[in-house]
Length: 127
Image 1 (tube, rainbow, N blue to C red):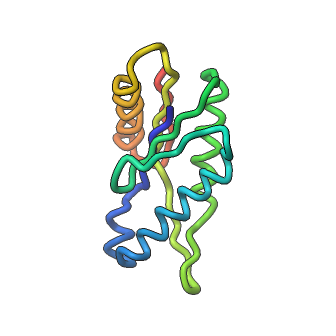
Image 2 (cartoon, rainbow, N blue to C red):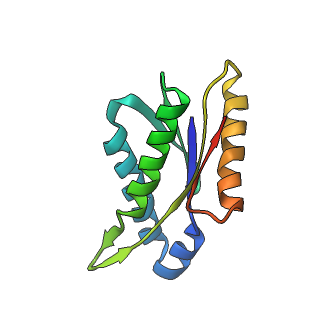
């Protein structure tokens, strides 16, 4: 499981407006969906936070995918009416070890908040 949110998303809404913020949300979710295709289930948890469930991946594969998503978002600004909105994400990831979905979400969310606490714009893998 991966959880991510958009760094400083409130500033995007405050600077550009909520419709433009919605465009950023749609753009990022489409980037991730296009990258992962049918191999994952992507959900919006609320606000600017998303979860991704990917089946049958080991820690090395999960780390690679997490870093690829992180880089893709940073290198793909949202294009709006002749200007770009650059965005980054903070991301946390965990491997399922037989716990409940709620417990998995909790430890993955903790990894996300560790990324945010260490300065944002990074990936934390909960091993």
